[in-house]
Every structure is written in C-alpha cells, then in structure tokens.
Image (tube, rainbow, N blue to C red; front, side, top):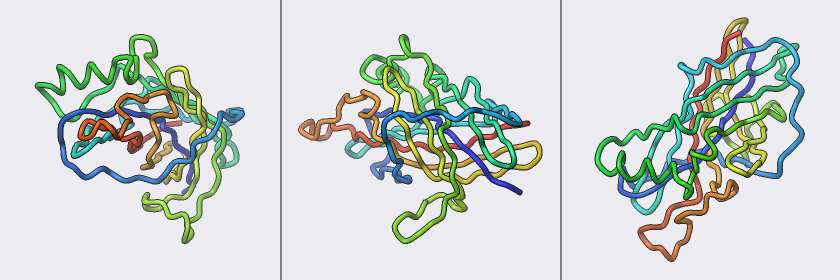
Amino acid sequence: MKAIFLIPGLLLTSILYTSCGDQAPKGDEATIQDAQQTSTAEGTQYVVDTQASRIRFVGHGVGKNHPGIFKLSSGNVAVANNQITGGSFVININSMELEEKGGMFDEKLHPHLMSGDFFDAAKFGTAKFEITGVQPYEKNDGDTSIVEGANFRVSGNFILKDATKNISFPAKIDLDDNTLKAKANFDIDRTQWQMNYGNDKTLGDKFISEKVNIELDLQAKR
C-alpha cells in the first residue's frame, strides 16, 4: 500500500460568539508563505468523492468553540509512478453547516460568518486549493505531527476571497489501485486571508482568535 496526498482544502476559517466548550482544539501548525508555482497534474486521475469527504473547522474565542463543516464541489489528484504530480480542489463556501443548531446559531452566527466580516459568500462562493508539492514526512524531536501515521507533507496554494497563500502541513495518505484516503489536522491564521474581524485582544471576552483548526478527512476514487 502506498501513500499520498491531501488538501485543505482548504482550508478554511471561521469563528464567533457563544460557548460550546472552552478548550480550543490543537492541530499541527501549518506553515504559511507567499503563493508558489503549482504542479502539473500528469498521470492517473483520482476524483474526490464529495459525499464521503469533509472539511471540519473549529473557530474559537474566549470560552467558546464553534465547529462546522464545508463540502467540496469538486476535486482531483494526479498520480504517476506512485507519486502525486498535482491536483486541485474546490470548496463550496455556501455549503457551510454549523454543528451547533437552532436559535442564535442559525439566526445570527451562520449569517455573520457568511457576511463580509468573514467569508463574504455572496461575492466569493468558492475557495480553492492547488497542490504545489508533496514530500515525505518524518517525525523528529522538533517536528512531531499529532496525526497518527503522518507520512507526507502537503503544500498548496489556498485561494480564499482575494488572497492566495501557500500552506504546508503533515498528512496521512494511503493509496491503493482504486482509492486514495487522506487525513490531516492543523491550525491556520485566518488573518492571512483578510479575515480580521474580532482579532483584537482589547475586546476582552468578545475577542476571536486568529487561529482556526482544520480537520480533513478526504477520499478520492480512480
């Protein structure tokens, strides 16, 4: 069995108001830098199963966590000689569902996250992740992933709203003749994608952290 790949997909970001536990989740710290040259997707194509895949996020503030899920609109990864050569993924921003239901979550939090303060979904209905590189990952004393069995470091350009940044994170990726599976758990800084709302510590208990936890569970089929 071989291993390969993963996205964020995205990547993504969100957070706000009341409580759902006061312990912020902790993921691997993603490396964020300027956009890089994308890879040429040559070889066998694996198409993302959008029903079986999910991108879970958790945003948090003072004494509050807010988890939710995005769906992928489409995605593919190319494999040649058991190595990823490229790939890209489209995230449906309008598919966002909060795990907390009813009341203020439906009437206030969800609309606020979709507004210009955060995703501006009316203007930017999708986000995209484009692979720029996949390298073997090995744990060491200074770099230990929380993802059990992490075996690759995935890098890609994450395009959200008007901003493009390259992110890099550990992932566990398994590949057989017909199916590719990938898992990752990492933190990103939402302000890198022009999401600055609430990120001011003078706001006291209304402060919203710049860090957002992303948990990926993806499947693709040949």
